[in-house]
Amino acid sequence: MVLTVIVALVSSLFLSACGKKEEKIVSIGEQFGLAYAPLEIMKSKGFLEDALEKRGLDIKVQWKKLGNTSAIREAMLSGDLDIGFTAIPPFLIGKDKGMDWRIIAGISKTSVSLVTKDPSLDSISDLKDSHRIMLPQPGSIQHILLMMAAEKEVKSASAFDGQLLSMAHPDGVTAFISGNSDLLHFTTPPYLQEELENGGRILLDGRESFGGDFTFIVGICQERVFKDAEVYESFKEALVKTMEYMQSDTDGTLAVLSEAYEYETGELENYLSDGTTTFGTGVEGLDTFVEFMERNGLISSELKDKELFWEQDAK
Image (cartoon, rainbow, N blue to C red; front, top):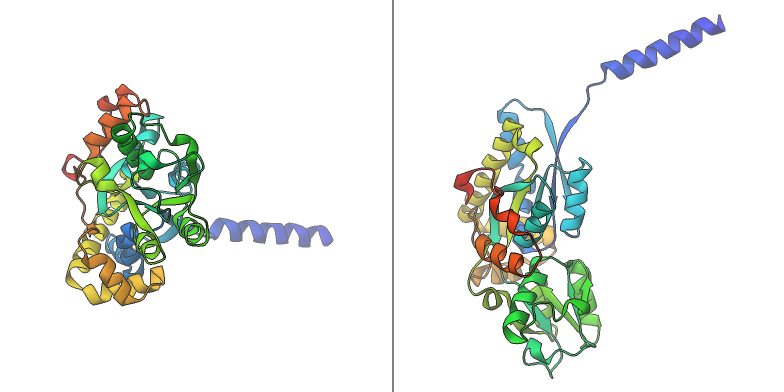
């Protein structure tokens, strides 16, 4: 009798497990700053869910906030992330090291600036060994822009590599405001404005270092996502819808971003109305990054022969 009950119970559990539908998830990874604002809009408005539902797909959208591109790469390798957002240089480094990811589209351009509180500094050539530069990680766009400036000003692109501190932007702004003048922070809006309002000043502007305009953030995915055509097309559709919404509904956009970034709408309006942060799906500056990084040994010459976009019209 006892054996019969046990067998019946096991059979019941087995059938229950077999009958349970496995939930399908598309996971999207972003980082910190206003440059990722379109993703906050897409998340809040449910544009990706709408695009998936329109195609009859029962897929849950999962959003993850990650500290740097290394975390995005590891999450993609483990299968925990489907679509990620990063700056161009770390994307190139990962591609050169064998990641099968390519660019889907760009999402933003923005100010990237090295901020200091030290009154003795007029340029990066004045930096002393005691100064420390906070940025997301070596190989980040901030690091590459610093290298570009160092190559021009002190004739050595790697001159300040020994003075880097890896730190996510929210932690960096806290350390900058509370720390001494030996700490500098290479950052972006809204953290940039917060530091400028708390005794900081710009020592190095990223556009000057680069020599012009460039796309700051691109969306990337691996081949397995690109080949899942309905999911891939759903995301592209949602991204276009997001950009259209941001252009047509300023008040709605500010309301979403105010909640997401915990800033007053008036502050955000000022940050976004100065023209230094713009949003769009084009990609600019890629060739300049490739040339500089290859010349300085950060990527191999073989990268030029690799396809960097999933679709030609994304360029």
